[in-house]
Image 1 (spheres, rainbow, N blue to C red):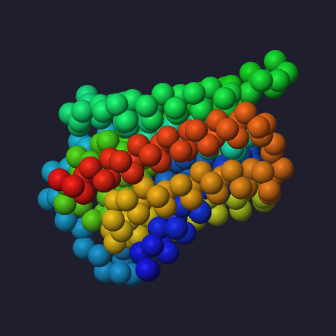
Image 2 (cartoon, rainbow, N blue to C red):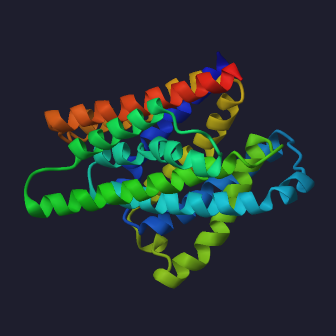
Length: 291
């Protein structure tokens, strides 16, 4: 029960990330950098307080996969945060949640899994749902939202790569895995941020600084810690089902808190996209359990 509560809380935190990222007056790459820094420091403190010992031999044996995962995490954050800035939280979250479909499409190549008729049907339904989500209004507004959805889809591809690469990481504790990936993300992002514009942290107003601190602590630190701690005690099918709290939280915040509207067709598209990924994920989990 405790693990389930931890996982649910992590999904709510992840679903609320758009509220913070959308209103922080910083470049997306800089937001990702400081989130890695703040989240990494918090997890380091947690590891010290819990007296967790790191196995450097296991880290060394996974170093290539950890670097690839960290690179994917950087791309995922940069494009996701930019998606939130360009379009509504709902559009960004739904386009980003195309990631499970990307995983299904890449699994035959990466994981040598067969692409069944059910999986192909799920992909087709998700694509049609994504088409319905695309805006259909004033040209200027459409271009903004289309760009945001495009960034969300790129973030989804990076997240799919992150998911697939993590399947090749062996014998690492969740805390170790997360902390190392955050540290490597910091190392990768630092030269990129310096080269593309430098730091604007000291030019921010108080609200942006507060939002950045909350994003780093809640999403980069506590959210990931709850995610990996909760996931370790849950079955695969439970994880697949509870993961939908993330996009549903985003939709709730978008509609209720920020009063961002969606048309009837977009709502149908959201149902198709989320429903198809749900069916695809649950069927995969059932197949894994039957082996």
